[in-house]
Image (cartoon, rainbow, N blue to C red; front, side, top):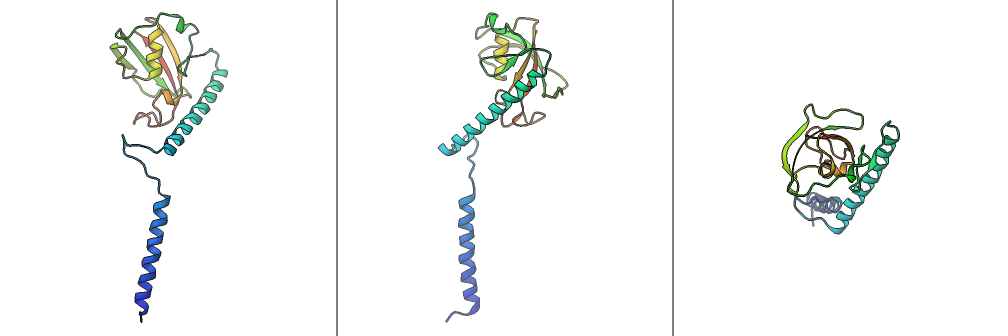
Length: 177
């Protein structure tokens, strides 16, 4: 015959095991950087990005509606204040360009004191935001432009680990030097 302590311990072990199994089923695993996601996780991520992009596009269009200056959509999913930007000759890969830009949030707050300046950067080997590279391909020398960039073309879901948080759309004021 089992004594009270043995019965109590067996029940405690059984209940603890059941709790551990239940907790393990609710825990979402995250793969390491460079790891693989399941098809369900990939679809969830795609849907989140699509919904965020749709929301930001509406917010940017509302912001544009309240401005004195017109902005024009570009095929890469950003807006620019120059109506004829894509009418200029496109710079080819391997050509060099010097430029600078400042980053702002949509409240007009400048995010960094000094501009991001790059001298003699080669197209095709840019380590730059896609919207910046795209606009620079068409922007004439000594010309300036303002870009309105959704977060997916900015610093995305991670931010820049400094002053730009995740999922932040940006205003980029760019100039070819």
